[in-house]
Length: 151
Image (cartoon, rainbow, N blue to C red):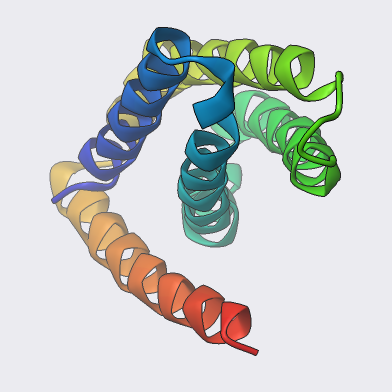
C-alpha cells in the first residue's frame, strides 16, 4: 500500500470514530475518545517520523509540511488535556468537539492540498516504499504502546 493510501485509511478510521461520537450519548464518549487517541497517536507518530521528514527534503513541500507539524502539535495538546480530565469534567465535551473540528480540518488540508502535491513530487515506487516503512513503524509503535500500557 502506498503512503497516501495508508494515511487516508487512517483518516477514514478516525472519521468513523468521530461519527460514532456524534451519534452516541455523552456517557459513551470517554470510551470512544480512548480509541480516537490511540489511532491519532499512531498516525501522528508515523507521519512525523517517516512521512513528514521525507516531504521536508523537497522545498515545494516544506511550508505545508511545517503547517502539518504545527497542527499535530496542537492536536497532541488537546489529546493530552482530554486524557487527563476527570470523567465528570465539564470541559471534556467542548474540548472533544474542538479536537474533532481541528482534526477534520487537518485531514481536509492533507487530502486536498498536501497529498496532490506529494503525488507530483514522488513517483509510485517511492510512495510504496514509504508506505511499507510506515506500516512497519506503525506495527512497532503499537507494540511499544501496548508494552508501555502493561507496565
